[in-house]
Image (cartoon, rainbow, N blue to C red; front, side, top):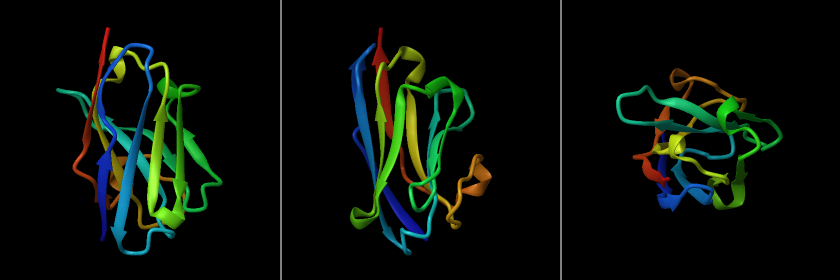
Length: 124
């Protein structure tokens, strides 16, 4: 198992930026593809972005393309989600997830380890 701890959430005005971080420990981090998911009240948890273990492949859901960048620093066992031009529809709890495979995953079922989540609230 990989233990994951998210940080960096908070309250931001529409148009603002946030950078989320996810620190991993435990099982070897470098062999894991990583993902960021989000869940708003009353909705399902859905993928925001994903990154392969090398960082060479990334995926973004359509609603965040051009506004969000996922990256990782394997030396620091950390994955990041840089978000710009935030809008109220981005308000959700954001979860970091680790996959026990090195290649991208796109659904919740493909990820084995989850963090506790960090709240992002965007005010209009």
